[in-house]
Image (cartoon, rainbow, N blue to C red; front, side, top):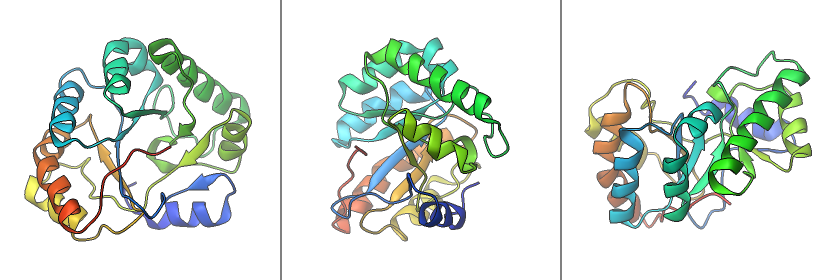
Length: 207
């Protein structure tokens, strides 16, 4: 679900949900990893670009690749939760939601020594119980305000245009470091960062 319409509605009507960051920056976020091929290459590229980011990782992949998660933290990036199994929580019961959040928090804690303070529900789908339970666990639900739909394969130049052409202060930009389009996203990233900076928009991590 790449549209920003539903995230904006959720942020407006659900306490504990945000879809924008502070207006002194823009925020590159990467979902669905860590991926053993794409994420390490992305970390090298982000380091070269001096560009911090936020990674919303799935719990079972954080368990499988804890070294990648640690490397991201050591490089100055923020690690956040994205559910354990990447299942939709829209119609999930409270027991399932707690299980997904707690298992993800524990996987991240085992990899990094810290518990995440941010959570993004898979596909951006959530009911009112998600921010309530996340809040009890000390987590803010983070959606997005701009998506280039990079989960679908597209020319890197098209991804760049979709991001740079629409981005403004405070935008939380939804990208992916795993999936069919992640290679194109990786290729597009230098031009995205250059284009954002040319507009006076400096990428920052979410806190």
